[in-house]
Length: 113
Length: 115
Image 1 (cartoon, rainbow over the protein chains, first blue to last red):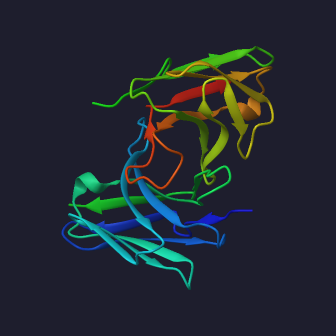
Image 2: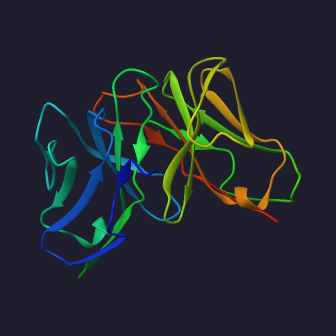
């Protein structure tokens, strides 16, 4: 049962254009969401997060949007750069209980120069 | 600069061997995690620990055990390695389990191959 889904395994974008990575979740208890970026042969690194009390969080070129009613979040990268080429994981967690972080399957982004 | 260090980048073991994967963090974090990453499945939580000698099962604990004798060190043990445990193993640590901007810090990963 995949509670966090990234339906696009890969995405190609021209340098300078916008990259939009999507993520859907099924568990209504999730209330904190994170995006991680992973280069080959390295561990994931934290990119940006958003709490369920917000619908948008921005950090430089990266913006995460949360639509709670649709159980959907997206990561926008503007403008995209070749160094952004990596696998992006969406993750979600719930306050209380074990507070485990559940990861999606990842989307491989390729930014073409 | 925060650091999570995994003892090996690559490891090849035989079926049936007992395998130890070591992870050390220097951030004085209470919480540590072991994940495995497989193509098409993302990162799946094996075990986590929220304090010394405390551990909780994650989503896929079967075939694994863990040890946390010191705050900075979290070991993953494959009791009897099998080929379906061939994977990338990732250790992570965090100050709190969730709710804190910044998420968890990951090690560089150990690519384990069981033959």
